[in-house]
Image (spheres, rainbow, N blue to C red):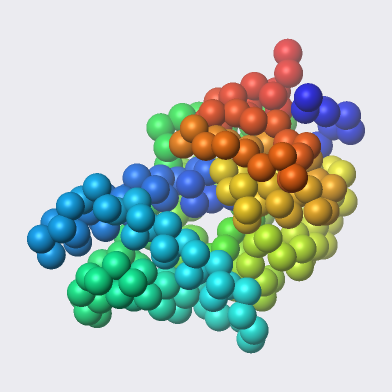
Length: 229
């Protein structure tokens, strides 16, 4: 059960997938690439999964690599692993799709309602110049934007979260983290003792090793937990 006490001061969010349409946009773009190369668009999910595996490995490397570099390196590796043409034009098509991602339909209204009571923050495995474009698509002011570029660390590293709390001037107990990322976000919440709300948009199975977290299907349900009547 979600514990509302102590009442949070800041609601923090993952961006890609949680607020904006990560899977929808990338599955569409990868599908276009597949069809153009004589392959079945249904294979897009497998290519995206391979990209995700590569990006997690790259994000753990030191020294810190910019996300724009990880995107291109990760997509090139995923395309190659699936025996697809990984030419620069193909890689650029996929990498430059990220800044174009707009919000899930219910997100702007849910954020506006939450903003009446709380400060809002985004914790993102992104660069400053990429996320600013996604923020513009949201259309709702965000009080704090914590990027991996600024923190010099990627989720699930505690370094990004600790940098965020110091920047915002709050303790972890004064926050709730809302995200669809099980490995990147709920794992970190579990290890840090941060209250988490898992936005399970894709009907996936959670990981009991990273409990406790509340589970919802979209941001409207998350807002309902955070705005009790």
